Length: 314
Ligand code: BDR
Ligand code: CA
Image (cartoon, rainbow, N blue to C red; front, side, top):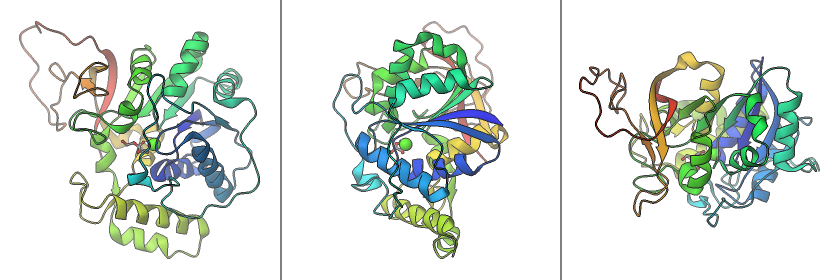
């Protein structure tokens, strides 16, 4: 099993991702850290503890992390996830509270204690990880790789240019993308492509199993709130969202990937938070289709960090 730490802003799709990660035998979830994003940090902690209670994982420590991005104010996504982050789906609360160490110390200790290099699965703005790398640069050596749901090759969702997690804390995204730690970017292309059809949602929602029923209820809310998202592969689907990134962390053969330099735009007036993915010398184009190698040397290169970018999923 692969030791992992999850960093989340639970959120409907983070909730699905947590369930998959905790329940899947290939992953050994050693800690979960919470950050402001879809909803405020304390609500993220409550939602995360609720999901762990639901799936019967009372021993995984949960750390409260940053309550705001590095330089700007939080900008929650309640229009996508509801005011409580989970679309009003009732989650059990078993009285457990967050680990007293907080996210940074919890991450540091979990990295230190893991029997092998850890995969960090980051499904949220990257504030916590950026702060960790600043405070404890030596911790980077214990991170095998980062799987990040964030960014986009093409159009954004928070703005025309930027994906929500990158847009919410662009400075943090720039620190992490530029850190030199092996990075798999699961951006908006696979994010919307990996989706659940309406029939499967109905089936889950009416299951007598409380966990399956909760998955169905969460997908139903996502289906309702994501209605009209043109990038979904079929009508009335719900995206797996962050859970798709967990699936790829479990089995990379599910994903088509290409290597490309990636940089985060920090100053653009209309493009702040955009992940600039330079595909000019990549083996595929924007749609993941094979393209002939670039013949002439590039005159103007992108000062991006070498990144494995997911272009699509099966
Ligand atoms: C990302 O933003 C959040 O709303 C989702 O949980 C996901 O991590 C998609 O842009
Ligand atoms: Ca998320």
